[in-house]
Amino acid sequence: MKNYIIIFITILLALLWKNGNAQTNIKIGELAPEITISEWLDNIPKEKSFKNKYIVLDFWATWCKPCLASVPHLNKLHRKFSSDKVVFLALTDESPSVARKVFNKTDFQSIVATDEYSKTQINFGDGVQGLVYYPMTVLIDDQNVIRWYGSSSNLTDEVMNDFLTGKPINVKQHSQDKLLDKKQNYEFVKEEIHDINWWGKLYEDPNIEWLVDIVEIEKLETKKGPTLSFGNGAFRDSISIEELFNGLFPKIKFMIPENYLDKNYRFAYINRNLDSESNKILLDEILRKLELESETKEELGINYKVKISNENLLVKSNFDGFEGYKKETEKTIFFMKKTIRGMLDVLTEETDHLWTFNGKNKTKYQFVIDLESDESIIENLACYGLKVKTKSIPMETIYLKQLKVKR
Image 1 (cartoon, one colour):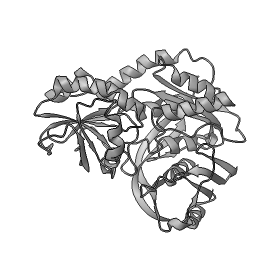
Image 2 (image 1 turned 30 degrees about the horizontal axis):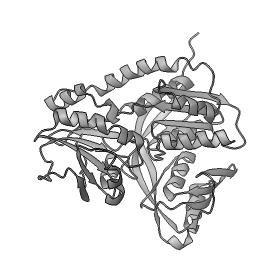
Image 3 (image 1 turned 90 degrees about the horizontal axis):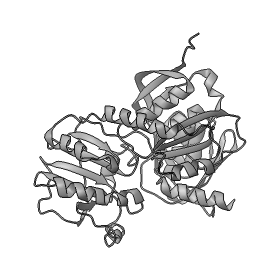
Image 4 (image 1 turned 45 degrees about the vertical axis):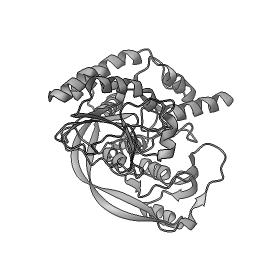
Protein backbone atom coordinates (compact mmCIF):
# COMPACT_ATOMS: atom_id res chain seq x y z
CA MET A 1 0.00 0.00 0.00
CA LYS A 2 2.86 2.35 0.84
CA ASN A 3 4.50 1.77 -2.56
CA TYR A 4 1.17 2.40 -4.28
CA ILE A 5 0.83 5.76 -2.54
CA ILE A 6 4.40 6.79 -3.40
CA ILE A 7 3.92 5.93 -7.08
CA PHE A 8 0.54 7.65 -7.09
CA ILE A 9 2.08 10.90 -5.76
CA THR A 10 4.98 10.66 -8.22
CA ILE A 11 2.62 10.27 -11.17
CA LEU A 12 0.38 13.02 -9.88
CA LEU A 13 3.28 15.44 -9.88
CA ALA A 14 4.91 14.14 -13.04
CA LEU A 15 1.80 14.42 -15.18
CA LEU A 16 0.98 17.98 -14.10
CA TRP A 17 -2.61 16.98 -13.48
CA LYS A 18 -4.16 19.44 -15.88
CA ASN A 19 -7.73 18.17 -16.04
CA GLY A 20 -9.59 19.93 -18.79
CA ASN A 21 -10.47 19.74 -22.42
CA ALA A 22 -8.15 17.87 -24.73
CA GLN A 23 -8.90 20.19 -27.61
CA THR A 24 -7.05 23.47 -28.11
CA ASN A 25 -8.94 26.59 -29.10
CA ILE A 26 -6.27 27.65 -31.63
CA LYS A 27 -5.52 26.42 -35.14
CA ILE A 28 -2.45 26.70 -37.31
CA GLY A 29 -2.97 29.22 -40.10
CA GLU A 30 -5.54 31.24 -38.17
CA LEU A 31 -5.12 34.56 -36.37
CA ALA A 32 -3.78 34.33 -32.83
CA PRO A 33 -5.99 35.41 -29.92
CA GLU A 34 -5.06 38.52 -27.98
CA ILE A 35 -2.15 38.23 -25.54
CA THR A 36 -3.13 39.86 -22.24
CA ILE A 37 -0.48 40.97 -19.75
CA SER A 38 -1.40 42.13 -16.26
CA GLU A 39 2.19 42.76 -15.09
CA TRP A 40 5.71 42.62 -16.55
CA LEU A 41 8.07 40.61 -14.33
CA ASP A 42 11.56 40.34 -15.83
CA ASN A 43 13.59 41.47 -18.87
CA ILE A 44 10.93 44.13 -19.34
CA PRO A 45 10.97 45.53 -22.90
CA LYS A 46 11.01 49.25 -23.68
CA GLU A 47 8.45 48.71 -26.42
CA LYS A 48 5.37 46.99 -24.99
CA SER A 49 3.62 46.38 -28.31
CA PHE A 50 4.28 43.14 -30.21
CA LYS A 51 2.53 44.27 -33.38
CA ASN A 52 4.25 43.19 -36.63
CA LYS A 53 6.74 41.08 -34.71
CA TYR A 54 7.49 37.37 -34.68
CA ILE A 55 6.50 36.02 -31.25
CA VAL A 56 7.72 32.89 -29.49
CA LEU A 57 5.08 32.61 -26.76
CA ASP A 58 5.98 30.09 -24.06
CA PHE A 59 3.45 29.27 -21.34
CA TRP A 60 4.95 28.24 -18.00
CA ALA A 61 4.15 27.90 -14.29
CA THR A 62 6.22 27.54 -11.13
CA TRP A 63 4.68 24.12 -10.43
CA CYS A 64 5.49 22.86 -13.95
CA LYS A 65 8.89 21.16 -13.66
CA PRO A 66 9.19 20.41 -17.42
CA CYS A 67 8.46 24.10 -18.12
CA LEU A 68 11.34 25.23 -15.91
CA ALA A 69 13.58 22.46 -17.28
CA SER A 70 13.00 23.76 -20.83
CA VAL A 71 14.16 27.31 -20.01
CA PRO A 72 17.84 26.66 -20.91
CA HIS A 73 16.71 25.30 -24.30
CA LEU A 74 14.57 28.39 -24.92
CA ASN A 75 17.44 30.61 -23.74
CA LYS A 76 19.65 29.00 -26.38
CA LEU A 77 17.06 29.72 -29.06
CA HIS A 78 16.71 33.26 -27.70
CA ARG A 79 20.45 33.90 -28.06
CA LYS A 80 20.40 32.59 -31.62
CA PHE A 81 17.19 34.07 -33.01
CA SER A 82 16.08 37.08 -30.94
CA SER A 83 16.18 40.47 -32.64
CA ASP A 84 14.19 43.68 -32.95
CA LYS A 85 11.66 41.67 -35.00
CA VAL A 86 11.65 38.48 -32.90
CA VAL A 87 10.24 38.45 -29.37
CA PHE A 88 10.53 35.61 -26.85
CA LEU A 89 7.78 35.90 -24.23
CA ALA A 90 7.45 33.59 -21.19
CA LEU A 91 3.93 33.95 -19.79
CA THR A 92 2.43 32.59 -16.56
CA ASP A 93 -0.94 33.19 -14.91
CA GLU A 94 0.39 33.13 -11.37
CA SER A 95 0.73 36.15 -9.10
CA PRO A 96 3.95 38.18 -9.40
CA SER A 97 4.99 37.19 -5.87
CA VAL A 98 4.65 33.48 -6.66
CA ALA A 99 6.27 33.70 -10.10
CA ARG A 100 9.30 35.64 -8.86
CA LYS A 101 10.17 32.89 -6.36
CA VAL A 102 11.83 30.85 -9.13
CA PHE A 103 13.93 33.69 -10.52
CA ASN A 104 16.85 32.99 -8.19
CA LYS A 105 17.08 29.41 -9.51
CA THR A 106 15.86 29.81 -13.09
CA ASP A 107 17.53 32.29 -15.44
CA PHE A 108 14.96 33.50 -17.97
CA GLN A 109 16.41 35.38 -20.92
CA SER A 110 12.97 35.80 -22.47
CA ILE A 111 10.64 38.61 -21.48
CA VAL A 112 8.69 37.32 -18.46
CA ALA A 113 5.15 38.45 -17.71
CA THR A 114 1.94 37.29 -16.05
CA ASP A 115 -1.73 37.27 -16.98
CA GLU A 116 -3.32 36.76 -13.58
CA TYR A 117 -6.81 36.59 -15.10
CA SER A 118 -5.79 33.64 -17.34
CA LYS A 119 -7.40 35.30 -20.37
CA THR A 120 -4.46 34.38 -22.60
CA GLN A 121 -4.29 30.82 -21.24
CA ILE A 122 -8.02 30.36 -21.90
CA ASN A 123 -7.86 31.85 -25.40
CA PHE A 124 -4.88 29.73 -26.38
CA GLY A 125 -6.16 26.69 -24.46
CA ASP A 126 -9.62 25.15 -24.62
CA GLY A 127 -11.44 28.46 -24.91
CA VAL A 128 -13.27 27.90 -21.64
CA GLN A 129 -11.06 26.88 -18.73
CA GLY A 130 -7.41 27.17 -19.65
CA LEU A 131 -4.47 25.46 -21.32
CA VAL A 132 -4.80 21.86 -22.41
CA TYR A 133 -1.27 20.91 -21.41
CA TYR A 134 2.09 22.23 -20.22
CA PRO A 135 4.71 22.92 -21.47
CA MET A 136 3.24 24.71 -24.49
CA THR A 137 4.95 27.06 -26.92
CA VAL A 138 3.23 28.94 -29.76
CA LEU A 139 4.86 30.59 -32.78
CA ILE A 140 3.02 33.67 -34.06
CA ASP A 141 4.30 35.44 -37.18
CA ASP A 142 4.45 39.16 -37.94
CA GLN A 143 0.93 39.05 -39.40
CA ASN A 144 -0.41 37.59 -36.10
CA VAL A 145 -0.93 34.16 -37.69
CA ILE A 146 -0.27 30.99 -35.67
CA ARG A 147 2.39 28.98 -37.48
CA TRP A 148 3.19 26.23 -34.97
CA TYR A 149 2.49 25.08 -31.43
CA GLY A 150 3.56 22.20 -29.24
CA SER A 151 5.91 21.16 -26.48
CA SER A 152 8.87 23.51 -26.12
CA SER A 153 11.23 20.52 -26.42
CA ASN A 154 10.04 20.12 -30.04
CA LEU A 155 10.93 23.70 -30.97
CA THR A 156 14.12 23.12 -32.98
CA ASP A 157 16.43 25.36 -34.96
CA GLU A 158 14.86 23.94 -38.13
CA VAL A 159 11.35 24.89 -37.00
CA MET A 160 12.54 28.38 -36.04
CA ASN A 161 14.27 28.88 -39.40
CA ASP A 162 11.13 27.83 -41.30
CA PHE A 163 9.05 30.09 -39.06
CA LEU A 164 11.18 33.18 -39.61
CA THR A 165 11.64 32.66 -43.35
CA GLY A 166 7.96 32.04 -44.03
CA LYS A 167 8.45 28.43 -45.12
CA PRO A 168 5.67 25.89 -44.43
CA ILE A 169 6.14 23.98 -41.18
CA ASN A 170 4.84 20.51 -42.04
CA VAL A 171 3.58 19.66 -38.57
CA LYS A 172 1.44 16.73 -39.70
CA GLN A 173 4.27 14.92 -41.46
CA HIS A 174 6.63 15.74 -38.60
CA SER A 175 4.17 14.21 -36.11
CA GLN A 176 3.57 11.11 -38.20
CA ASP A 177 7.31 10.53 -38.58
CA LYS A 178 7.73 10.84 -34.80
CA LEU A 179 4.85 8.40 -34.29
CA LEU A 180 6.54 5.76 -36.42
CA ASP A 181 9.76 6.22 -34.46
CA LYS A 182 7.96 6.02 -31.13
CA LYS A 183 6.23 2.77 -32.05
CA GLN A 184 9.63 1.12 -31.74
CA ASN A 185 9.67 2.23 -28.10
CA TYR A 186 6.26 0.69 -27.62
CA GLU A 187 6.79 -2.71 -29.25
CA PHE A 188 8.55 -4.25 -26.25
CA VAL A 189 5.38 -3.92 -24.14
CA LYS A 190 4.02 -7.36 -25.00
CA GLU A 191 1.72 -7.99 -22.05
CA GLU A 192 -1.64 -6.38 -21.47
CA ILE A 193 -2.02 -3.40 -19.14
CA HIS A 194 -1.89 -4.38 -15.48
CA ASP A 195 -2.32 -1.59 -12.96
CA ILE A 196 -1.13 1.88 -12.03
CA ASN A 197 2.12 0.50 -10.56
CA TRP A 198 2.92 -1.11 -13.92
CA TRP A 199 2.04 2.07 -15.79
CA GLY A 200 3.89 4.28 -13.30
CA LYS A 201 7.12 2.39 -13.93
CA LEU A 202 6.64 2.79 -17.68
CA TYR A 203 6.02 6.50 -17.27
CA GLU A 204 9.22 6.89 -15.27
CA ASP A 205 11.21 5.13 -18.03
CA PRO A 206 12.75 7.91 -20.20
CA ASN A 207 12.99 5.47 -23.13
CA ILE A 208 9.19 5.33 -23.41
CA GLU A 209 8.28 8.43 -25.38
CA TRP A 210 4.96 7.28 -26.79
CA LEU A 211 2.49 4.58 -25.80
CA VAL A 212 -1.20 3.93 -26.36
CA ASP A 213 -2.81 0.72 -25.19
CA ILE A 214 -6.38 -0.33 -24.53
CA VAL A 215 -7.57 -3.83 -23.58
CA GLU A 216 -11.02 -5.17 -22.84
CA ILE A 217 -11.47 -6.40 -19.25
CA GLU A 218 -14.22 -7.54 -16.93
CA LYS A 219 -15.95 -4.60 -15.29
CA LEU A 220 -14.46 -3.79 -11.88
CA GLU A 221 -16.68 -3.13 -8.88
CA THR A 222 -14.84 0.11 -8.12
CA LYS A 223 -12.73 2.45 -10.18
CA LYS A 224 -9.17 2.36 -8.98
CA GLY A 225 -6.25 4.63 -9.68
CA PRO A 226 -6.33 8.25 -10.85
CA THR A 227 -8.85 9.75 -13.21
CA LEU A 228 -7.79 10.74 -16.69
CA SER A 229 -5.06 13.30 -17.07
CA PHE A 230 -5.33 15.33 -20.24
CA GLY A 231 -1.69 16.26 -20.39
CA ASN A 232 1.10 13.97 -21.53
CA GLY A 233 -0.24 10.79 -20.00
CA ALA A 234 -3.27 8.97 -18.67
CA PHE A 235 -4.22 5.70 -17.02
CA ARG A 236 -7.66 4.34 -16.28
CA ASP A 237 -8.20 1.06 -14.50
CA SER A 238 -11.78 0.52 -15.63
CA ILE A 239 -13.65 2.63 -18.16
CA SER A 240 -16.26 2.40 -20.88
CA ILE A 241 -15.58 3.64 -24.40
CA GLU A 242 -18.17 6.37 -23.91
CA GLU A 243 -16.48 7.63 -20.72
CA LEU A 244 -13.04 7.43 -22.35
CA PHE A 245 -14.00 9.48 -25.40
CA ASN A 246 -15.99 12.00 -23.34
CA GLY A 247 -13.00 12.49 -21.06
CA LEU A 248 -10.28 12.71 -23.71
CA PHE A 249 -12.23 14.60 -26.37
CA PRO A 250 -14.98 16.58 -24.60
CA LYS A 251 -15.61 18.91 -27.55
CA ILE A 252 -16.36 15.98 -29.87
CA LYS A 253 -19.56 13.96 -29.81
CA PHE A 254 -19.14 10.24 -30.54
CA MET A 255 -21.85 7.94 -31.87
CA ILE A 256 -20.67 4.54 -30.64
CA PRO A 257 -21.88 1.15 -31.97
CA GLU A 258 -24.34 -0.46 -29.57
CA ASN A 259 -22.29 -3.65 -29.17
CA TYR A 260 -19.39 -1.56 -27.78
CA LEU A 261 -21.40 0.31 -25.16
CA ASP A 262 -21.47 -2.50 -22.58
CA LYS A 263 -17.78 -3.34 -22.89
CA ASN A 264 -15.21 -2.27 -20.31
CA TYR A 265 -11.57 -1.39 -20.86
CA ARG A 266 -8.26 -0.61 -19.23
CA PHE A 267 -6.48 2.30 -20.87
CA ALA A 268 -2.93 3.69 -20.79
CA TYR A 269 -1.36 6.59 -22.67
CA ILE A 270 2.03 8.31 -22.66
CA ASN A 271 3.17 11.08 -25.01
CA ARG A 272 6.19 13.14 -24.01
CA ASN A 273 6.16 15.31 -27.14
CA LEU A 274 2.73 16.88 -27.52
CA ASP A 275 1.95 19.01 -30.56
CA SER A 276 -1.00 20.07 -32.68
CA GLU A 277 -1.42 16.57 -34.17
CA SER A 278 -1.28 14.64 -30.87
CA ASN A 279 -5.05 14.40 -30.38
CA LYS A 280 -5.61 13.08 -33.89
CA ILE A 281 -2.83 10.52 -33.53
CA LEU A 282 -4.21 9.40 -30.16
CA LEU A 283 -7.74 8.99 -31.52
CA ASP A 284 -6.55 7.17 -34.66
CA GLU A 285 -4.55 4.71 -32.55
CA ILE A 286 -7.45 4.01 -30.18
CA LEU A 287 -9.78 3.38 -33.12
CA ARG A 288 -7.22 1.12 -34.78
CA LYS A 289 -6.87 -1.00 -31.66
CA LEU A 290 -10.65 -1.20 -31.24
CA GLU A 291 -11.10 -2.05 -34.94
CA LEU A 292 -13.39 0.92 -35.51
CA GLU A 293 -13.64 3.28 -38.46
CA SER A 294 -15.04 6.79 -38.35
CA GLU A 295 -17.03 9.35 -40.31
CA THR A 296 -17.01 12.99 -39.17
CA LYS A 297 -19.89 15.46 -39.37
CA GLU A 298 -20.56 18.83 -37.71
CA GLU A 299 -23.72 19.02 -35.61
CA LEU A 300 -25.04 21.02 -32.67
CA GLY A 301 -24.11 19.94 -29.14
CA ILE A 302 -24.83 21.21 -25.63
CA ASN A 303 -22.53 23.13 -23.33
CA TYR A 304 -23.74 23.40 -19.71
CA LYS A 305 -22.04 26.53 -18.34
CA VAL A 306 -21.93 26.56 -14.53
CA LYS A 307 -21.40 29.51 -12.20
CA ILE A 308 -21.68 30.08 -8.45
CA SER A 309 -24.95 31.71 -7.42
CA ASN A 310 -24.73 31.05 -3.64
CA GLU A 311 -21.28 30.18 -2.28
CA ASN A 312 -22.71 29.51 1.20
CA LEU A 313 -24.33 26.30 -0.06
CA LEU A 314 -21.01 24.75 -1.12
CA VAL A 315 -19.64 22.10 1.26
CA LYS A 316 -15.89 22.37 1.86
CA SER A 317 -14.11 19.02 1.93
CA ASN A 318 -12.64 17.75 5.19
CA PHE A 319 -11.38 14.59 3.53
CA ASP A 320 -7.68 13.93 4.29
CA GLY A 321 -7.07 11.52 1.40
CA PHE A 322 -6.33 12.11 -2.26
CA GLU A 323 -8.53 14.21 -4.45
CA GLY A 324 -11.03 11.90 -6.09
CA TYR A 325 -14.48 10.44 -6.31
CA LYS A 326 -16.30 7.13 -6.24
CA LYS A 327 -19.56 5.77 -7.56
CA GLU A 328 -21.96 4.96 -4.73
CA THR A 329 -24.29 3.34 -7.28
CA GLU A 330 -24.27 3.07 -11.06
CA LYS A 331 -25.94 6.50 -11.28
CA THR A 332 -24.64 8.32 -8.18
CA ILE A 333 -21.16 9.83 -7.74
CA PHE A 334 -19.71 10.97 -4.42
CA PHE A 335 -16.96 13.54 -4.86
CA MET A 336 -14.85 13.43 -1.71
CA LYS A 337 -12.46 16.25 -2.54
CA LYS A 338 -12.88 18.10 -5.82
CA THR A 339 -12.80 21.62 -7.18
CA ILE A 340 -15.92 22.70 -9.04
CA ARG A 341 -14.00 22.48 -12.29
CA GLY A 342 -12.67 19.03 -11.45
CA MET A 343 -16.17 17.80 -10.62
CA LEU A 344 -17.51 19.16 -13.92
CA ASP A 345 -14.68 17.46 -15.82
CA VAL A 346 -15.95 14.15 -14.44
CA LEU A 347 -19.52 15.02 -15.46
CA THR A 348 -18.23 15.66 -18.99
CA GLU A 349 -16.60 12.24 -18.89
CA GLU A 350 -19.70 10.51 -17.54
CA THR A 351 -22.27 12.19 -19.81
CA ASP A 352 -22.38 13.11 -23.48
CA HIS A 353 -22.33 16.87 -22.84
CA LEU A 354 -19.69 19.50 -22.11
CA TRP A 355 -19.84 20.89 -18.52
CA THR A 356 -17.71 23.99 -17.91
CA PHE A 357 -17.13 26.33 -14.97
CA ASN A 358 -17.35 30.10 -15.32
CA GLY A 359 -14.99 31.10 -12.51
CA LYS A 360 -11.57 30.68 -10.86
CA ASN A 361 -12.59 29.09 -7.53
CA LYS A 362 -9.95 26.48 -6.58
CA THR A 363 -11.38 25.38 -3.21
CA LYS A 364 -11.95 21.62 -2.75
CA TYR A 365 -15.54 20.62 -1.99
CA GLN A 366 -17.73 17.57 -1.48
CA PHE A 367 -20.57 16.81 -3.88
CA VAL A 368 -23.11 14.04 -4.37
CA ILE A 369 -24.45 14.01 -7.94
CA ASP A 370 -27.25 11.85 -9.39
CA LEU A 371 -26.50 10.99 -13.03
CA GLU A 372 -29.98 9.70 -13.85
CA SER A 373 -30.61 12.61 -16.24
CA ASP A 374 -29.35 16.08 -17.13
CA GLU A 375 -32.24 17.50 -15.15
CA SER A 376 -31.26 15.58 -12.01
CA ILE A 377 -27.65 16.77 -12.35
CA ILE A 378 -28.80 20.39 -12.67
CA GLU A 379 -31.08 19.98 -9.62
CA ASN A 380 -28.19 18.53 -7.59
CA LEU A 381 -25.86 21.36 -8.62
CA ALA A 382 -28.51 23.88 -7.55
CA CYS A 383 -28.42 22.32 -4.05
CA TYR A 384 -24.77 23.46 -3.88
CA GLY A 385 -25.55 26.99 -5.06
CA LEU A 386 -24.41 26.32 -8.63
CA LYS A 387 -26.48 27.76 -11.46
CA VAL A 388 -26.48 26.17 -14.91
CA LYS A 389 -26.97 27.93 -18.23
CA THR A 390 -27.50 25.84 -21.35
CA LYS A 391 -25.87 26.86 -24.61
CA SER A 392 -25.97 25.17 -28.02
CA ILE A 393 -22.54 24.96 -29.62
CA PRO A 394 -21.25 23.51 -32.90
CA MET A 395 -19.63 20.18 -32.14
CA GLU A 396 -17.71 17.78 -34.28
CA THR A 397 -19.70 14.53 -34.35
CA ILE A 398 -17.86 11.31 -35.14
CA TYR A 399 -19.90 8.27 -36.16
CA LEU A 400 -18.10 5.02 -35.39
CA LYS A 401 -18.69 1.60 -36.86
CA GLN A 402 -16.89 -1.72 -36.65
CA LEU A 403 -14.45 -2.53 -39.39
CA LYS A 404 -15.53 -5.31 -41.72
CA VAL A 405 -13.35 -8.36 -41.23
CA LYS A 406 -11.73 -9.50 -44.47
CA ARG A 407 -12.03 -13.22 -45.08
